[in-house]
Length: 266
Length: 332
Image 1: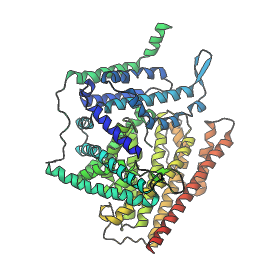
Image 2: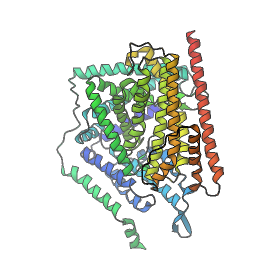
Image 3: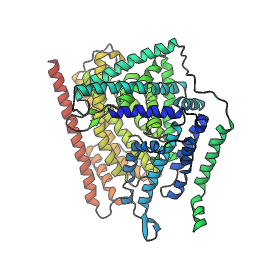
Image 4: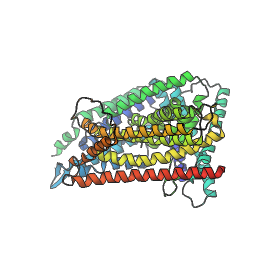
């Protein structure tokens, strides 16, 4: 099933990207995590008609894409998951909200159109920000940041284990479905009679695997804590990068920068 | 059902983050109290299993479409609600980070909408009481379907509320609810059946893996118990629906800041009353939507919703009937 293969290759390519040697990759994960959440919060905090201000937010993803040398197309591909739902929610706005709020020449733009576009731009920006985090930060580092925020150890260990086993079990799911489809040619999914045995077998095997994993972990001296990521010294850039960006984003949110720029030319 | 960051405001996201974090804290304490060192690796592998299993398409009989497994309900039936909840958070976090399914800011909402209802309502209110006296095929089927339908309805309703409170859509409350609930009723039925199929398989192959089942008790359910469970389910669903119906105008009014106080919802005792509330809710629509075509749109929406519900119930009843008949044939 190609969907499963896609998922596996997506995880693998992100893993490879995040372990790269770039400047953004080497920054402290806590700073990057907080900056990402801050960026998303500021972005979605724009009111529904503030399209011009919202567009200035693009300065952060644009800059990081350049600095981290990431592929923009790859990131946009991720929008396919989010956009459908956002579209369903926003697409009717133009029909419900018809008050003209903006006139460009003779063209009147209604509030609904404006709020719909604002919503789409928010979706694009927030998805890009998420991509920039995961494409420059390995999951172990993100868990290290979560530990620094005092999230319980049980939780981060479970996240790391899920991540470790996702590719293994995805590969297993691919083998199972491939075998099934070879025995049931021309069938789109799994027939209802096979629902239980097919998934159930996979589940029992996974449970046995978990036992094996646990035994192996014990033999290797597992005490409930993973060696967390690279322990590097805090460098000035680790602090400066998030702080400077937060100040820039805050300034863009609080001041009407776009109208200032516009006034320069009009 | 994953909400994107763009659909929430920081205030809504923050509130649900806080609620989810509190529940997670409680769950961590409960899991620690169990003090079972094997639990953590099992949680990790089961989380990965749910992730992988949700990628497999299951053909829905009689239709061309396909459904997936319901993670929350299945995890709590195997791990218990607390470990299941923590595992679901892990799954949601990885889906959000690696597949942009949901968002970092909306994660709190997604945890609440999917993991909280799925694990706690599904496991504590439905699974555990039903499995107290041992499990059987029928009981597992009933619990899974009921649990999935109920928790998905609650989740879908929360998505609607959170989106509207964030003010990103101009959709009137009633239209949004009318679009969300029936779709998720159908999804819940299918997910429930798939989840039931897996859990029945586990029950037959390795019954000791199921959580909250009294192993010493005989699995047969008496007629009285069956009727009791069905009656309870009807009460829950009926009560929930009437509550939903009567809270529709209040919810919206609250959303647009018209009403201040929090008045107690009157228990809508009779069907008549509930129907009256439902009517009130649908006739609420024209004020916001298409002025001039009031009654036409109102009836259309309620008509479509009604038709969809009837259709879904019929399909479900037919599927259940066939399932049991085939089982009987197989054993006979």
